[in-house]
Image (cartoon, rainbow, N blue to C red; front, side, top):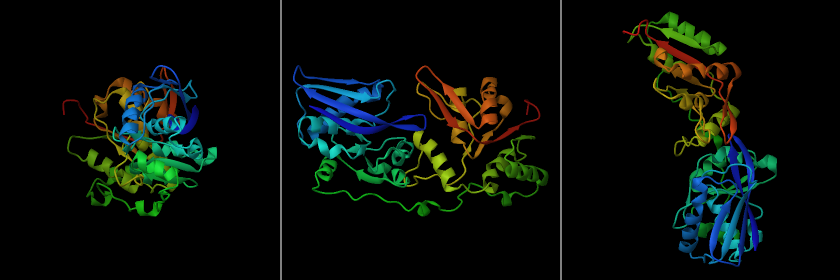
Amino acid sequence: MLTIVRSLALNGLESYIVRVEVDVSSGLPGFELVGLPDAAVREAKDRVRAAIKNAGFDFPARRITVNLAPADLKKEGPVYDLAISLGILASTEQIDSGLVNDYIFIGELSLDGTIQGVNGVLPRVSLLPLDGYEQVVVPVENADEAALIQGIKVYPTTNLNQLIRHLQGEEPIKSHFVDINKFWTGRNLSGDMAEVRGQLAVKRGLEVAAAGGHNVLMLGSPGSGKTMLARRLPGILPELSLDEALEVTNLYSLAGMLQSGQPLITERPFRSPHHNTSTSAIVGGGKYPKPGEISLAHLGVLFLDEVAEFRRDALEALRQPLEDGVVSISRVHASITYPARIMLIASMNPCRCE
């Protein structure tokens, strides 16, 4: 029997629907997973098998084929565990296949059937209203994050049994709602420009740069206050709007850097990578490209302390993103563009001997 369950995948920050097609047929027992899965997706077969058994359901001793469509796009991460498990249960008639048609499912399964949080939930669900889907099931840890998107119903779940009871109408889960205003806690900065005494010329220069979005190079002896002043620069920048906050939060969600209990980034980012940071860490990259420091500083400040010590190729890689406001990363598996509208603040000593 064939069952189709829907989940979500990402190509950079672009979300698209994945049809998890599960077919359970007669034949020698086996579990085949196709559709360009990475290692984390392929390992889902072991997590799903244990989770279904430990949740009190029967795992079929039959031939199982799972296709993640569209098959020409790479799938990564454990976000499809929940959809695969429901597809197997529906294909073996342990639940009604019609129960899963109106939902999008996101979540990683533990071996005991617990649903674990995943990265990148906010950018995944952000396009659901445009695609015509209104209901999404997510782990409890990601509920606040997903509920930031208006126009969808978010159902937070803790385990597979709870979700099945909800789908069957036995114990409905209340849709989750968050008041965005409660996350606007006001500015919580590490330093205030008003605390700086003296340095009138530098402060004036930083004010002009903040007003016009200009880049700055500070040249001065060690201990003269270059880093102190740079860290206080976000305090004189305008506050983020809601749309800007969601842009920044999308990037941090994808990178897995959202703090527990604070699903929305409300402060302008300040990133200060060490001078021995690799080029791919600064501009983004990896086998499956992730945002780098320049994207994590989007709509904020990227501070390069001791800029003369950075690798030349890392500095050269910043040229185009600074001009275009985006960074494009091309790899064998994908070509991805991330936003990178930043203020670049750099500092250095007058001489390398200092």
